[in-house]
Amino acid sequence: MALPDRLPAVADEDASRAVVGDEAVLRPGVDALARTLGLRPERLRRLPNGSLPVYADDRLVLKLFPPPDAGGARVEAAALRAVTGRLPVPSPAVHADGTHDDWRYVLMDRLPGQDLSTVWADLARRDRRRLAGQAGALCRALHQVDPPAVEDWWPQDWGAFVDDQRATARERHGRWGLPRPWLEQVDGFLDRTPLPPGPRVLLHTEVMPANLLAAPDADGRWSLSGVCDFEPAMRGHAEYDLVAVAVFMAGGDPTVLREALTAYGCEAAGLDEDLSRRLLAWTLLHRFGNVAAFFAFLPPPPTPTWSALARAWFGVTFGDR
Image (tube, rainbow, N blue to C red; front, side):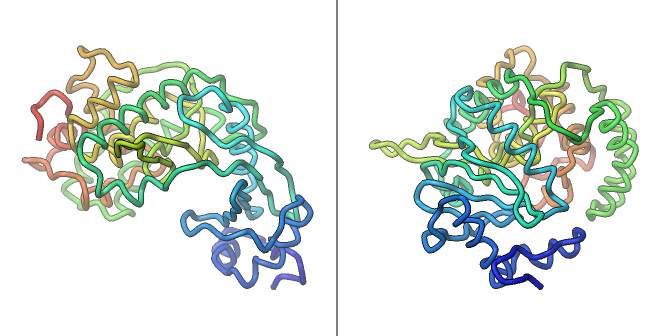
């Protein structure tokens, strides 16, 4: 239970899940923190999306991290400071970050625009292509920013992370509900799909409509107006960041994916089957790459093989579908 005007004590992830959605328990502590930060509590409204408590007034966003997620607060604050003014899409400037009642918080700008996930399904293809191109350019600029120094930033060893994800891929995707015929092919596909070495760049890891803001201009053309939610940021291979763009923005449409990859800087000759296979391999290795769930909204392959799936989901040279 929370003490008056205090955020609740949280000892582990189970306790965290029990309280992050309980506004009656959280709000007294949130209001006390708001007053400490010079905010007017009566103007703060909780935002509906996300797994963490996020509050906003007209100008600022206050994001809270229970103790088990403290590392995410450090990463978010550091990443936002690193990218401020260096991306083609606005990112929130950090006004304050710290600890309150053993919870971490980040106070940042509220960006203009609309949560892109709320309108994405209704957008015309030309708007999706335009926005995907802007997301590709955003990733390219992000990957040119030097990763900040963050204490205990997970994973500290990218190669070890990839090796572990590869070793546990079959078990992990089986736990997520991937059917056995697909599971039986996982190891062989990964073995036949070499992933290139490369410098570790700053990764957002979830460049997707849920973490982007957009607004239409006077002619009704949509453009990105903001990127947020950097707490899962990592340092790793650049192609890892293209998975979310491909899955959640292209959605199996090769014209949309081609727009994103071209804006990212991929040469035409590199938009080939090898790239499609690598993107599927990175999806299998991605910490949020739930392939079983993706089958619900991405196009089915003509045959039940990973190679065919790579073409269906990440193909850009096999004709417009």
